[in-house]
Length: 497
Ligand code: G6P
Image (cartoon, rainbow, N blue to C red; front, side):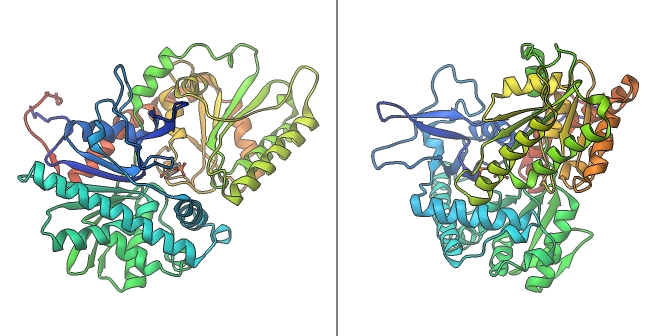
Protein backbone atom coordinates (compact mmCIF):
# COMPACT_ATOMS: atom_id res chain seq x y z
CA UNK A 1 0.00 0.00 0.00
CA UNK A 2 1.20 3.45 -0.90
CA UNK A 3 0.64 6.43 1.31
CA UNK A 4 0.36 9.88 -0.11
CA UNK A 5 -0.38 13.18 1.51
CA UNK A 6 -2.65 16.00 0.51
CA UNK A 7 -1.31 19.19 -1.04
CA UNK A 8 1.59 19.88 1.26
CA UNK A 9 3.85 22.47 -0.28
CA UNK A 10 7.56 22.26 0.38
CA UNK A 11 7.84 26.01 0.19
CA UNK A 12 5.78 29.08 0.75
CA UNK A 13 3.73 30.20 -2.16
CA UNK A 14 3.59 33.72 -3.55
CA UNK A 15 0.72 33.93 -6.02
CA UNK A 16 0.79 36.84 -8.46
CA UNK A 17 -2.36 37.49 -10.48
CA UNK A 18 -4.02 40.55 -11.96
CA UNK A 19 -6.96 40.21 -9.58
CA UNK A 20 -6.66 39.43 -5.88
CA UNK A 21 -8.64 36.34 -4.77
CA UNK A 22 -11.41 38.69 -3.60
CA UNK A 23 -12.62 42.09 -4.76
CA UNK A 24 -12.82 45.09 -2.47
CA UNK A 25 -15.97 47.19 -2.43
CA UNK A 26 -16.38 50.59 -0.85
CA UNK A 27 -19.01 50.86 1.88
CA UNK A 28 -21.28 53.87 2.50
CA UNK A 29 -19.08 55.07 5.36
CA UNK A 30 -16.05 55.01 3.01
CA UNK A 31 -14.60 51.78 4.44
CA UNK A 32 -13.70 48.68 2.44
CA UNK A 33 -15.17 45.17 2.52
CA UNK A 34 -14.01 41.97 0.88
CA UNK A 35 -16.40 40.35 -1.61
CA UNK A 36 -15.50 36.75 -2.43
CA UNK A 37 -14.56 35.73 -5.97
CA UNK A 38 -15.99 32.44 -7.12
CA UNK A 39 -13.43 31.14 -9.64
CA UNK A 40 -11.86 27.70 -9.48
CA UNK A 41 -8.37 29.14 -9.23
CA UNK A 42 -9.26 30.92 -6.02
CA UNK A 43 -11.03 27.88 -4.58
CA UNK A 44 -8.00 25.66 -5.08
CA UNK A 45 -5.08 27.95 -4.54
CA UNK A 46 -6.25 30.28 -1.75
CA UNK A 47 -6.40 27.51 0.90
CA UNK A 48 -2.82 26.51 0.04
CA UNK A 49 -1.65 30.10 0.40
CA UNK A 50 -3.39 30.24 3.78
CA UNK A 51 -1.93 26.89 4.89
CA UNK A 52 1.63 27.56 3.69
CA UNK A 53 1.74 31.05 5.19
CA UNK A 54 2.00 32.34 1.64
CA UNK A 55 1.28 35.70 0.07
CA UNK A 56 -0.96 36.94 -2.75
CA UNK A 57 -0.04 39.88 -4.95
CA UNK A 58 -2.83 41.44 -7.05
CA UNK A 59 -5.17 44.27 -7.95
CA UNK A 60 -8.13 44.74 -5.59
CA UNK A 61 -10.50 45.90 -8.36
CA UNK A 62 -10.89 49.49 -7.15
CA UNK A 63 -8.77 52.58 -6.59
CA UNK A 64 -7.15 52.44 -3.15
CA UNK A 65 -6.66 55.72 -1.31
CA UNK A 66 -3.58 56.55 0.78
CA UNK A 67 -5.58 55.89 3.94
CA UNK A 68 -7.08 52.56 2.78
CA UNK A 69 -5.89 49.16 3.87
CA UNK A 70 -7.02 45.65 2.99
CA UNK A 71 -9.59 44.55 5.62
CA UNK A 72 -9.20 41.32 7.63
CA UNK A 73 -11.53 38.46 6.74
CA UNK A 74 -14.61 38.68 8.93
CA UNK A 75 -15.82 36.08 11.38
CA UNK A 76 -18.07 33.46 9.82
CA UNK A 77 -16.42 33.88 6.41
CA UNK A 78 -16.80 30.56 4.59
CA UNK A 79 -15.19 31.63 1.31
CA UNK A 80 -11.90 30.02 0.18
CA UNK A 81 -10.01 33.13 1.30
CA UNK A 82 -11.23 32.85 4.91
CA UNK A 83 -8.12 32.82 7.06
CA UNK A 84 -6.10 34.79 4.51
CA UNK A 85 -4.83 37.57 6.75
CA UNK A 86 -4.49 41.10 5.45
CA UNK A 87 -0.74 40.76 6.06
CA UNK A 88 -0.76 38.00 3.42
CA UNK A 89 -2.24 40.28 0.79
CA UNK A 90 -0.11 42.75 -1.16
CA UNK A 91 -2.32 44.94 -3.29
CA UNK A 92 -1.15 46.59 -6.47
CA UNK A 93 -2.81 49.87 -7.26
CA UNK A 94 -3.88 50.70 -10.81
CA UNK A 95 -4.55 54.39 -11.36
CA UNK A 96 -7.04 55.59 -13.99
CA UNK A 97 -4.38 55.73 -16.70
CA UNK A 98 -3.16 52.18 -15.90
CA UNK A 99 -6.73 50.92 -15.87
CA UNK A 100 -7.38 52.44 -19.29
CA UNK A 101 -4.09 51.66 -21.08
CA UNK A 102 -2.93 48.47 -19.32
CA UNK A 103 -6.18 46.68 -18.38
CA UNK A 104 -8.71 47.91 -21.00
CA UNK A 105 -5.97 48.52 -23.57
CA UNK A 106 -3.08 46.08 -23.71
CA UNK A 107 -4.70 43.19 -21.78
CA UNK A 108 -8.21 43.29 -23.14
CA UNK A 109 -8.00 45.09 -26.49
CA UNK A 110 -4.66 43.61 -27.62
CA UNK A 111 -3.68 40.33 -25.97
CA UNK A 112 -7.17 38.94 -25.40
CA UNK A 113 -8.20 38.98 -29.09
CA UNK A 114 -4.71 38.16 -30.37
CA UNK A 115 -4.24 35.12 -28.14
CA UNK A 116 -7.72 33.91 -29.14
CA UNK A 117 -6.54 34.06 -32.78
CA UNK A 118 -8.74 37.03 -33.65
CA UNK A 119 -6.07 39.52 -34.75
CA UNK A 120 -8.55 41.69 -36.68
CA UNK A 121 -10.15 42.64 -33.39
CA UNK A 122 -6.82 43.50 -31.77
CA UNK A 123 -5.58 47.07 -31.39
CA UNK A 124 -1.82 47.63 -31.43
CA UNK A 125 -0.83 50.82 -29.69
CA UNK A 126 2.53 51.80 -28.29
CA UNK A 127 0.95 53.60 -25.34
CA UNK A 128 -0.85 50.39 -24.32
CA UNK A 129 2.45 48.55 -24.46
CA UNK A 130 4.31 51.18 -22.41
CA UNK A 131 1.59 50.95 -19.75
CA UNK A 132 1.75 47.14 -19.81
CA UNK A 133 5.49 47.24 -19.22
CA UNK A 134 5.10 49.75 -16.39
CA UNK A 135 2.34 47.82 -14.61
CA UNK A 136 4.30 44.56 -14.96
CA UNK A 137 7.24 46.38 -13.31
CA UNK A 138 4.90 47.50 -10.50
CA UNK A 139 3.75 43.92 -9.94
CA UNK A 140 7.39 42.74 -10.00
CA UNK A 141 8.48 45.32 -7.42
CA UNK A 142 5.73 44.28 -5.05
CA UNK A 143 6.50 40.59 -5.62
CA UNK A 144 10.14 41.32 -4.71
CA UNK A 145 8.93 42.91 -1.49
CA UNK A 146 7.03 39.69 -0.84
CA UNK A 147 10.20 37.67 -1.51
CA UNK A 148 12.24 39.78 0.92
CA UNK A 149 9.58 39.27 3.59
CA UNK A 150 9.68 35.51 2.97
CA UNK A 151 13.45 35.43 3.21
CA UNK A 152 13.27 37.14 6.60
CA UNK A 153 10.36 35.05 7.94
CA UNK A 154 11.41 31.63 6.53
CA UNK A 155 15.11 31.77 5.57
CA UNK A 156 15.20 27.95 5.30
CA UNK A 157 12.67 27.79 2.44
CA UNK A 158 12.91 28.51 -1.27
CA UNK A 159 9.63 30.29 -2.07
CA UNK A 160 7.64 29.57 -5.22
CA UNK A 161 6.43 32.61 -7.15
CA UNK A 162 3.43 31.51 -9.20
CA UNK A 163 2.43 34.08 -11.84
CA UNK A 164 -0.95 33.82 -13.58
CA UNK A 165 -2.22 34.73 -17.01
CA UNK A 166 -1.75 37.15 -19.89
CA UNK A 167 -1.80 40.27 -17.75
CA UNK A 168 1.63 39.50 -16.33
CA UNK A 169 3.76 37.96 -19.05
CA UNK A 170 6.76 40.25 -18.40
CA UNK A 171 6.84 40.07 -14.60
CA UNK A 172 9.08 37.00 -14.29
CA UNK A 173 11.93 38.76 -16.11
CA UNK A 174 12.31 41.58 -13.61
CA UNK A 175 11.66 39.30 -10.66
CA UNK A 176 14.42 36.89 -11.73
CA UNK A 177 16.96 39.63 -12.48
CA UNK A 178 16.48 41.55 -9.25
CA UNK A 179 16.17 38.43 -7.10
CA UNK A 180 19.55 37.29 -8.46
CA UNK A 181 21.10 40.70 -7.76
CA UNK A 182 19.82 40.63 -4.19
CA UNK A 183 20.59 36.97 -3.64
CA UNK A 184 16.94 36.12 -3.03
CA UNK A 185 16.23 32.44 -3.68
CA UNK A 186 13.04 31.52 -5.54
CA UNK A 187 11.47 29.34 -8.17
CA UNK A 188 9.19 30.99 -10.69
CA UNK A 189 6.20 29.33 -12.37
CA UNK A 190 3.74 30.75 -14.88
CA UNK A 191 0.34 29.47 -15.94
CA UNK A 192 -1.54 30.87 -18.95
CA UNK A 193 -5.31 30.54 -18.56
CA UNK A 194 -6.06 31.44 -22.21
CA UNK A 195 -4.84 29.82 -25.46
CA UNK A 196 -1.30 30.42 -26.71
CA UNK A 197 -1.68 31.24 -30.42
CA UNK A 198 0.30 29.84 -33.36
CA UNK A 199 3.50 31.70 -34.29
CA UNK A 200 1.82 33.19 -37.40
CA UNK A 201 -0.55 35.06 -35.07
CA UNK A 202 1.94 35.72 -32.28
CA UNK A 203 4.37 37.41 -34.62
CA UNK A 204 1.79 40.10 -35.42
CA UNK A 205 2.44 41.60 -32.00
CA UNK A 206 5.18 44.19 -32.55
CA UNK A 207 7.08 43.36 -29.35
CA UNK A 208 6.53 39.58 -29.38
CA UNK A 209 10.17 38.85 -28.52
CA UNK A 210 9.80 40.68 -25.20
CA UNK A 211 6.73 38.60 -24.34
CA UNK A 212 8.49 35.33 -25.13
CA UNK A 213 11.57 36.34 -23.12
CA UNK A 214 9.34 37.41 -20.24
CA UNK A 215 7.66 34.02 -20.07
CA UNK A 216 10.97 32.18 -20.49
CA UNK A 217 12.30 33.83 -17.34
CA UNK A 218 10.28 31.16 -15.47
CA UNK A 219 11.38 27.65 -14.46
CA UNK A 220 8.04 26.07 -15.43
CA UNK A 221 5.46 27.33 -17.91
CA UNK A 222 2.04 25.67 -17.88
CA UNK A 223 -0.65 25.79 -20.56
CA UNK A 224 -4.00 23.99 -20.64
CA UNK A 225 -3.29 21.71 -23.60
CA UNK A 226 -0.46 20.33 -25.69
CA UNK A 227 -1.32 22.44 -28.74
CA UNK A 228 -0.68 25.65 -26.78
CA UNK A 229 2.64 24.23 -25.51
CA UNK A 230 3.70 23.41 -29.08
CA UNK A 231 2.65 26.87 -30.29
CA UNK A 232 4.78 28.40 -27.56
CA UNK A 233 7.82 26.22 -28.32
CA UNK A 234 7.42 27.08 -32.00
CA UNK A 235 7.36 30.80 -31.20
CA UNK A 236 10.47 30.49 -29.03
CA UNK A 237 12.34 28.68 -31.77
CA UNK A 238 11.25 30.88 -34.65
CA UNK A 239 10.97 34.20 -32.84
CA UNK A 240 13.99 34.00 -30.54
CA UNK A 241 16.07 31.26 -32.10
CA UNK A 242 15.87 29.26 -28.86
CA UNK A 243 16.83 25.61 -28.87
CA UNK A 244 13.71 23.59 -28.13
CA UNK A 245 12.86 19.95 -27.58
CA UNK A 246 9.25 19.31 -28.59
CA UNK A 247 9.17 15.78 -27.24
CA UNK A 248 10.46 16.58 -23.77
CA UNK A 249 8.87 20.05 -24.00
CA UNK A 250 11.94 22.04 -23.04
CA UNK A 251 13.24 25.39 -24.22
CA UNK A 252 16.71 26.79 -23.62
CA UNK A 253 16.96 30.42 -22.72
CA UNK A 254 19.70 32.51 -21.10
CA UNK A 255 21.69 29.42 -20.15
CA UNK A 256 18.71 27.84 -18.40
CA UNK A 257 16.32 25.08 -19.41
CA UNK A 258 12.65 25.95 -19.10
CA UNK A 259 10.03 23.23 -18.72
CA UNK A 260 6.80 23.59 -20.71
CA UNK A 261 3.84 21.44 -19.58
CA UNK A 262 0.24 20.82 -20.58
CA UNK A 263 -1.70 21.07 -17.32
CA UNK A 264 -5.44 21.25 -18.04
CA UNK A 265 -7.29 23.07 -15.26
CA UNK A 266 -10.31 21.45 -13.61
CA UNK A 267 -13.11 22.70 -11.39
CA UNK A 268 -13.93 22.18 -7.70
CA UNK A 269 -16.11 19.20 -8.69
CA UNK A 270 -17.39 18.22 -5.27
CA UNK A 271 -18.35 21.82 -4.45
CA UNK A 272 -20.54 22.02 -7.58
CA UNK A 273 -21.98 18.56 -6.95
CA UNK A 274 -22.86 19.65 -3.42
CA UNK A 275 -24.33 22.98 -4.54
CA UNK A 276 -26.50 21.06 -7.02
CA UNK A 277 -27.81 18.96 -4.13
CA UNK A 278 -28.55 22.04 -2.04
CA UNK A 279 -29.91 24.39 -4.71
CA UNK A 280 -33.69 24.84 -4.46
CA UNK A 281 -35.91 24.10 -7.44
CA UNK A 282 -35.26 26.91 -9.90
CA UNK A 283 -38.47 26.49 -11.86
CA UNK A 284 -36.84 25.30 -15.06
CA UNK A 285 -38.25 21.79 -14.99
CA UNK A 286 -41.87 22.58 -14.21
CA UNK A 287 -43.49 23.79 -17.41
CA UNK A 288 -42.93 20.98 -19.93
CA UNK A 289 -40.63 23.17 -21.97
CA UNK A 290 -37.16 21.76 -22.57
CA UNK A 291 -34.38 24.13 -21.63
CA UNK A 292 -31.23 24.73 -23.63
CA UNK A 293 -28.80 26.59 -21.39
CA UNK A 294 -25.95 28.96 -22.20
CA UNK A 295 -23.81 30.62 -19.52
CA UNK A 296 -20.95 32.90 -20.50
CA UNK A 297 -19.23 36.17 -19.80
CA UNK A 298 -20.50 38.50 -22.52
CA UNK A 299 -17.41 38.07 -24.70
CA UNK A 300 -17.01 37.79 -28.48
CA UNK A 301 -14.84 34.68 -28.06
CA UNK A 302 -17.83 32.79 -26.65
CA UNK A 303 -19.69 32.58 -29.97
CA UNK A 304 -22.95 34.02 -28.65
CA UNK A 305 -24.13 35.52 -31.94
CA UNK A 306 -23.57 32.23 -33.80
CA UNK A 307 -25.33 30.43 -30.97
CA UNK A 308 -28.47 32.56 -31.27
CA UNK A 309 -28.41 32.10 -35.04
CA UNK A 310 -28.12 28.32 -34.61
CA UNK A 311 -31.08 28.33 -32.24
CA UNK A 312 -33.09 30.35 -34.77
CA UNK A 313 -32.11 27.85 -37.48
CA UNK A 314 -33.32 24.98 -35.27
CA UNK A 315 -36.75 26.59 -34.94
CA UNK A 316 -36.89 27.12 -38.71
CA UNK A 317 -35.77 23.65 -39.74
CA UNK A 318 -37.30 21.58 -36.94
CA UNK A 319 -40.55 23.47 -36.25
CA UNK A 320 -41.79 20.59 -34.08
CA UNK A 321 -39.78 22.23 -31.27
CA UNK A 322 -41.69 25.52 -31.45
CA UNK A 323 -43.48 26.08 -28.16
CA UNK A 324 -41.68 23.11 -26.57
CA UNK A 325 -38.16 24.40 -25.98
CA UNK A 326 -36.45 27.58 -24.90
CA UNK A 327 -32.93 28.91 -24.89
CA UNK A 328 -31.95 30.39 -21.57
CA UNK A 329 -28.85 32.46 -22.09
CA UNK A 330 -27.08 34.00 -19.09
CA UNK A 331 -24.59 36.68 -20.18
CA UNK A 332 -22.41 38.03 -17.40
CA UNK A 333 -21.29 41.66 -17.96
CA UNK A 334 -17.55 41.82 -18.57
CA UNK A 335 -14.99 44.50 -19.53
CA UNK A 336 -17.81 46.95 -20.15
CA UNK A 337 -15.50 49.88 -20.95
CA UNK A 338 -13.95 48.12 -23.97
CA UNK A 339 -15.52 48.95 -27.35
CA UNK A 340 -15.79 45.39 -28.71
CA UNK A 341 -17.77 44.43 -25.60
CA UNK A 342 -20.08 47.45 -25.85
CA UNK A 343 -20.75 46.60 -29.52
CA UNK A 344 -21.42 42.94 -28.72
CA UNK A 345 -23.96 43.92 -26.07
CA UNK A 346 -25.86 45.93 -28.68
CA UNK A 347 -25.73 43.11 -31.24
CA UNK A 348 -27.04 40.62 -28.69
CA UNK A 349 -29.87 42.87 -27.53
CA UNK A 350 -30.95 43.32 -31.16
CA UNK A 351 -30.71 39.67 -32.13
CA UNK A 352 -32.57 38.40 -29.07
CA UNK A 353 -35.33 40.91 -29.85
CA UNK A 354 -35.48 39.88 -33.50
CA UNK A 355 -35.70 36.14 -32.80
CA UNK A 356 -38.22 36.55 -30.02
CA UNK A 357 -40.25 38.89 -32.22
CA UNK A 358 -40.25 36.36 -35.02
CA UNK A 359 -41.34 33.26 -33.09
CA UNK A 360 -43.12 34.34 -29.88
CA UNK A 361 -46.75 33.46 -29.23
CA UNK A 362 -48.98 34.91 -26.49
CA UNK A 363 -47.88 32.11 -24.15
CA UNK A 364 -44.32 31.31 -25.22
CA UNK A 365 -41.04 33.01 -26.20
CA UNK A 366 -38.03 31.12 -27.52
CA UNK A 367 -35.26 33.01 -25.74
CA UNK A 368 -34.91 34.03 -22.11
CA UNK A 369 -31.95 36.38 -21.92
CA UNK A 370 -30.41 37.35 -18.58
CA UNK A 371 -27.75 40.08 -18.72
CA UNK A 372 -26.29 40.16 -15.20
CA UNK A 373 -24.44 38.28 -12.49
CA UNK A 374 -26.11 35.30 -10.86
CA UNK A 375 -24.93 33.50 -7.75
CA UNK A 376 -23.09 30.17 -7.97
CA UNK A 377 -25.88 28.56 -5.97
CA UNK A 378 -28.51 29.70 -8.46
CA UNK A 379 -26.27 28.68 -11.35
CA UNK A 380 -25.91 25.18 -9.91
CA UNK A 381 -29.72 24.88 -10.00
CA UNK A 382 -29.82 25.91 -13.70
CA UNK A 383 -27.04 23.48 -14.57
CA UNK A 384 -28.88 20.69 -12.76
CA UNK A 385 -32.32 21.32 -14.26
CA UNK A 386 -31.60 22.35 -17.86
CA UNK A 387 -31.86 19.67 -20.57
CA UNK A 388 -28.99 20.68 -22.82
CA UNK A 389 -25.95 22.92 -22.28
CA UNK A 390 -24.74 24.78 -25.34
CA UNK A 391 -21.06 25.62 -24.89
CA UNK A 392 -19.96 26.86 -28.30
CA UNK A 393 -17.02 29.29 -28.07
CA UNK A 394 -15.19 30.26 -31.27
CA UNK A 395 -12.00 29.86 -29.22
CA UNK A 396 -11.50 29.29 -25.49
CA UNK A 397 -8.47 28.40 -23.35
CA UNK A 398 -10.35 25.65 -21.46
CA UNK A 399 -14.00 26.59 -20.66
CA UNK A 400 -15.17 25.76 -17.18
CA UNK A 401 -18.91 26.06 -17.85
CA UNK A 402 -18.79 22.70 -19.67
CA UNK A 403 -17.22 21.14 -16.57
CA UNK A 404 -19.51 22.85 -14.06
CA UNK A 405 -22.54 21.64 -16.04
CA UNK A 406 -21.52 17.98 -15.83
CA UNK A 407 -20.62 18.31 -12.13
CA UNK A 408 -24.18 19.46 -11.42
CA UNK A 409 -25.98 16.61 -13.29
CA UNK A 410 -26.98 14.75 -10.17
CA UNK A 411 -30.51 13.93 -11.39
CA UNK A 412 -31.41 13.55 -15.06
CA UNK A 413 -28.35 13.16 -17.32
CA UNK A 414 -28.44 16.16 -19.63
CA UNK A 415 -26.57 16.59 -22.89
CA UNK A 416 -23.45 18.70 -23.31
CA UNK A 417 -22.85 20.30 -26.71
CA UNK A 418 -19.28 21.53 -26.91
CA UNK A 419 -17.04 23.38 -29.34
CA UNK A 420 -13.82 21.64 -30.37
CA UNK A 421 -12.17 25.08 -30.21
CA UNK A 422 -12.34 25.13 -26.41
CA UNK A 423 -9.51 23.41 -24.54
CA UNK A 424 -12.20 21.27 -22.89
CA UNK A 425 -13.26 20.01 -26.35
CA UNK A 426 -10.06 17.98 -26.60
CA UNK A 427 -10.85 15.99 -23.46
CA UNK A 428 -14.59 15.78 -22.96
CA UNK A 429 -15.01 13.17 -25.70
CA UNK A 430 -18.50 12.07 -24.70
CA UNK A 431 -19.96 15.51 -25.34
CA UNK A 432 -21.52 16.25 -28.74
CA UNK A 433 -18.76 18.19 -30.43
CA UNK A 434 -19.75 20.75 -33.04
CA UNK A 435 -18.01 23.49 -35.00
CA UNK A 436 -19.70 26.76 -33.98
CA UNK A 437 -18.95 28.33 -37.38
CA UNK A 438 -21.30 25.78 -39.02
CA UNK A 439 -24.63 27.17 -37.93
CA UNK A 440 -26.74 24.58 -39.78
CA UNK A 441 -24.79 21.73 -38.19
CA UNK A 442 -25.17 23.24 -34.71
CA UNK A 443 -28.94 23.30 -35.32
CA UNK A 444 -28.86 19.60 -36.30
CA UNK A 445 -26.77 18.65 -33.28
CA UNK A 446 -29.16 20.57 -31.03
CA UNK A 447 -32.03 18.56 -32.49
CA UNK A 448 -30.10 15.36 -31.81
CA UNK A 449 -29.44 16.43 -28.22
CA UNK A 450 -33.09 17.29 -27.63
CA UNK A 451 -34.20 13.89 -28.90
CA UNK A 452 -31.40 11.72 -27.47
CA UNK A 453 -32.62 8.60 -25.62
CA UNK A 454 -32.12 8.45 -21.86
CA UNK A 455 -29.67 5.52 -22.00
CA UNK A 456 -27.29 7.26 -24.35
CA UNK A 457 -27.44 10.44 -22.32
CA UNK A 458 -26.67 8.48 -19.17
CA UNK A 459 -23.67 6.63 -20.60
CA UNK A 460 -22.18 9.85 -21.92
CA UNK A 461 -22.81 11.88 -18.79
CA UNK A 462 -21.48 9.22 -16.42
CA UNK A 463 -18.21 9.13 -18.33
CA UNK A 464 -17.98 12.93 -18.40
CA UNK A 465 -18.63 13.19 -14.66
CA UNK A 466 -16.16 10.46 -13.76
CA UNK A 467 -13.36 12.25 -15.61
CA UNK A 468 -14.02 15.69 -14.11
CA UNK A 469 -14.29 14.23 -10.64
CA UNK A 470 -10.76 12.84 -10.83
CA UNK A 471 -9.16 15.67 -12.77
CA UNK A 472 -10.53 18.45 -10.60
CA UNK A 473 -8.92 21.76 -9.73
CA UNK A 474 -6.99 20.24 -6.83
CA UNK A 475 -5.48 17.67 -9.15
CA UNK A 476 -4.44 20.53 -11.45
CA UNK A 477 -2.84 22.50 -8.65
CA UNK A 478 -0.95 19.48 -7.33
CA UNK A 479 0.25 18.67 -10.85
CA UNK A 480 1.64 22.17 -11.22
CA UNK A 481 3.38 22.06 -7.84
CA UNK A 482 4.75 18.59 -8.60
CA UNK A 483 6.06 19.68 -12.01
CA UNK A 484 8.00 22.53 -10.45
CA UNK A 485 9.14 20.31 -7.58
CA UNK A 486 7.41 21.89 -4.60
CA UNK A 487 4.90 19.22 -3.63
CA UNK A 488 6.03 16.98 -0.81
CA UNK A 489 4.65 13.49 -0.81
CA UNK A 490 4.88 12.23 2.69
CA UNK A 491 3.05 9.75 4.89
CA UNK A 492 -0.57 10.68 5.09
CA UNK A 493 -3.97 9.28 4.42
CA UNK A 494 -3.95 5.91 2.70
CA UNK A 495 -5.56 6.35 -0.70
CA UNK A 496 -4.57 3.29 -2.72
CA UNK A 497 -6.25 -0.13 -2.40
C1 G6P B 1 -10.51 34.99 -18.13
C2 G6P B 1 -9.07 35.25 -17.77
C3 G6P B 1 -8.95 35.65 -16.30
C4 G6P B 1 -9.89 36.78 -16.00
C5 G6P B 1 -11.33 36.42 -16.38
C6 G6P B 1 -12.33 37.55 -16.13
O1 G6P B 1 -10.96 33.82 -17.56
O2 G6P B 1 -8.27 34.13 -18.06
O3 G6P B 1 -7.64 36.02 -15.98
O4 G6P B 1 -9.81 37.16 -14.65
O5 G6P B 1 -11.35 36.07 -17.75
O6 G6P B 1 -11.95 38.73 -16.77
P1 G6P B 1 -11.61 40.08 -15.99
O7 G6P B 1 -11.08 40.99 -17.05
O8 G6P B 1 -12.90 40.55 -15.41
O9 G6P B 1 -10.60 39.78 -14.91
